[in-house]
Amino acid sequence: MRWMILFLLAALVNPGFAQDTGPAADSHGVPTDLNTILQLQIFLDRHMFGPGKLDGAVGEFTYKAVVNYNFAHGNRDLYDWQPVLTAAAQEVPVVYAAFKIRTDLEKFVNPQLPEKPEDQVSHPYMAYRSWAELVAERFHTDETFLAKCNPNLKLTALKPGDVVMVPNVRSFRIEEVKAMQSFPKDATLSLNTIVVDTTERIAAVYDPGERLLAAFPITPGKPEFIPVGTWSVKTIMTTPSFRYDKQFLEEGVRGKEAYQLPPGPNSPVGIIWCGLSKSGIGLHGTALPRTIGRSRSAGCVRLANWDAIRLPQLVRPSSPVIVR
Image 1 (cartoon, rainbow, N blue to C red):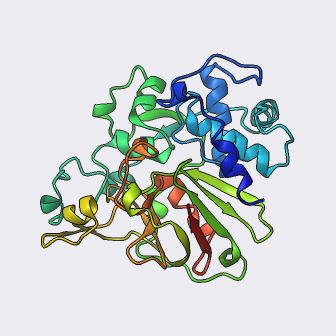
Image 2: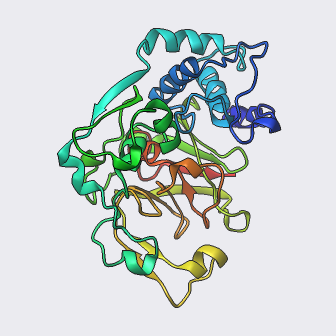
Image 3: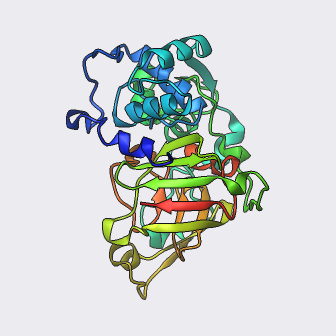
């Protein structure tokens, strides 16, 4: 039963939607209205069925999130959008919220953060490079959609005190991410299983009864580095540093030149590391949430920071991890 949802996803996505373009309404009532789609995405995000970035567009991961939600809630027709749309309309009557940028968040923004790893090592923290980047990730979206929500705001000139319209989602709060927090085994959570489907680009979490609890979009590793097999979670820790080794990332072999990068949301491994029993491999965050599902890492599994931070609520050390 555990594999059923992952196999069903393969028949779901029309190749024409690969770039997240909005399809016309179909017989299952797929919406075309931006606000209705955003309402649905917020609802799915709240229930841990990640639709990808919130952008009011029907794309691959929104489709998969609807199917996963239907499967998890016992809806007979997995491709019927109406039950999810009805639930979303009831639970999320307000789609947008106003966010006032606070001065206490300034320490998380550094416009001077260099692009090159050899220069980043001299900085203590891999901060956001702009206020727009902070606000976009905070509300599970990207700067492009943020600009669409705020046509009269110059996003490159945002500052504390400015009010920004954002999706009405439970925000990813970087200020609440504790430094180097580790998560121990848990009598309940350590029994849950992660199934990483590298073809569908989904990480799904099941309880011991094989009930689907959550599913998030991922970027899997390069095909030659994907650690197919059954492993387990060994460690979960926030704010990891990262050993940047260009040769290892490209070839899978440690090089002679490497840089130990500081922690932060712009770290290549984001704000949390979930290490596996397969040495050097883990599930982690990312500096580039808009690329989830579209580009490849070396051998690890990347999630958007707003999804990665939820892993300790779902799994703990000793949780089985099936990579396929």
